[in-house]
Image (cartoon, rainbow, N blue to C red; front, side):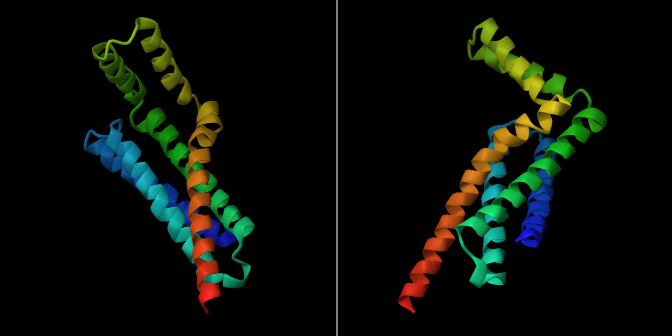
Length: 168
């Protein structure tokens, strides 16, 4: 369980980093494409990880073990991704946070948000890139939906396995 989780957690973390970097190069790093591709990558790698575990250990494949695999994959991949974002925003492009904040401020002004709402949104964005927040709050904030997705995928695998066993 641990080996499978580590393998797929590293793979998913690196895939998220690569997808984010490609989108950034294309100028789409803060677009809706980022969210869409992020979740597509998560679904693919959680499915591959759970599938791998179910094939390697069919006798041990149950809800608790598959949830353990999901937790390892998600937490490890989030840590890898947050480390990448820390290095990127600290060393590779230290102006990235300011540039994104400026772009989003303009978009919120055009969308006729109040000045107070704009300031709150931008401050929340800036706070999310403080190192302590990046490695705690942000991992939890994005990890929980990914764990839920992984749990649903695991339940689908367990349902299919039970159906296959009943038909045999």
